[in-house]
Amino acid sequence: MTRQSKTELGIRNLLVIFFLVFAATPLIWLVLTSLKQRQDIFGAVLLFTPTFEAYSRIFSGTGDTVVIGLMNSTRVALFNTLIVLVLAVSAGYPLSRGTFRGRKVILFGVLASRLMPPVVVILPLFLTARHFGVIDQIGTIAVLHAVFSLPLGIWLMKSFYDSVPVSLEEAAFIDGATLFQTLWRVTLPLVRAGITTVGLLAFIFSWNEFLFALVFTQRNARTAPIVLANATYGEAQIFWADMSAVALIMTIPAVIVAVVAQKYLVRGLTSGSVK
Picture 1 (cartoon, rainbow, N blue to C red):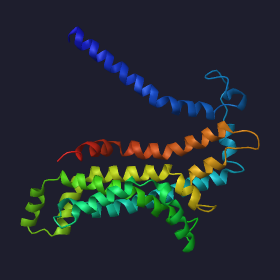
Picture 2: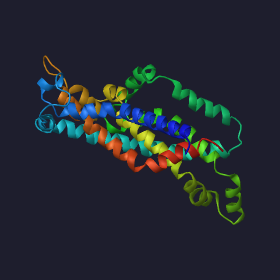
Picture 3: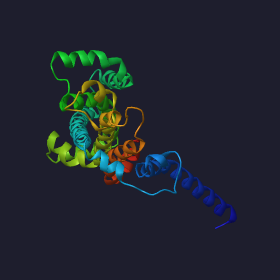
Picture 4: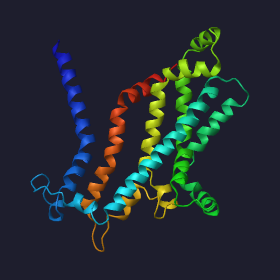
């Protein structure tokens, strides 16, 4: 290896380390803050006596609220992910393979709906939900999340279907397979990485979403972000350690899902980008 190659490799490694530290610093700071007493929050950075008082407080007294918020977030995220996967997988195929009139109009219409800021439609959606009596329900939040997650899911699934050669499906048809058999046994296994990508993005969006959960929940369906926002303020202070502890606990499920699906996520984000 030449000196120039070694220099380039060293610079590349330094850049990787820099961006890794840059990305990990907020999470490390969150962990350290959750283990500090109040007098150490704005003073000591590393030299302090760790304590789990914040975790003890959030799981005692108001702990039921935190647990219920996490359970509600899980239910909403899973329900939203299921809706998005079923509809995106079903809609992406005809938009990829079909030649019917208006296909491009539908595609750009789906994309245009995603470009609309959610805050623009929050009032009419709230009035509609109140009229039908579905405020403060898990299903309402999940459906609203699906409405704004679905356009991206449809476009991603279309690109993944586009990457599958049509000749493979034609060969299955020649062998006597029906459309459903071809889709189930040939096409869907080849776009498995894309399905995982769409599901993961829908789950993370729903897990972190705040606006709809704030407006459309009151007590029974409050998700973890709302619990975090409501449980961090005292009469004259902000409970930074408690807020950090709740935020860290909220991060764990999303990290676990991302790590488990990492192989399919990386493959899906690359293989679906070209035909």
